[in-house]
Length: 214
Image (cartoon, rainbow, N blue to C red; front, top):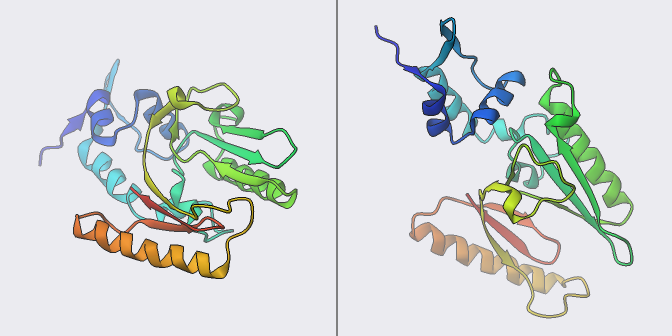
């Protein structure tokens, strides 16, 4: 039985990862290790790469290291990303930013440590009265700044449909307004489904509904 071997360029094409992302995932134990072909060349069995792609698409895998919360928001984060950014906004206070990057951890650190820090910071800010936001799109793994901008985004993973009130943004939505947003989101999901879109992730935003289409 023949075994097809992929070189790094082919692995990058099949997975959508950059070369450095592939090697970082290997260091974290999250990607198949290459096999040695010669003294100066290595490659991956295509079957191992394909198995990784199938496994990674499983919704269960997106919950890794997040057992403390079953909120749908967790599923929006790419748990294999190397950089996460949190922003905290509170009236009358400077905006807080926190970057959780693989560069800040020892090479043998489990990815769960990054996600635990992400959750701890978000919960602390929330308890202090901040509105907490996370950058959901994939940030360049070599980003070294304090707050990611458009140029620092490697890929956009979601289409967001934000269903909110057209007015009175300075006060909480009423139960009737929230129910109207829920009803409208159901109509939008049915319409998108007719055009072939898969079921979105649904998150209550506080004053309405967010639909995230992958």
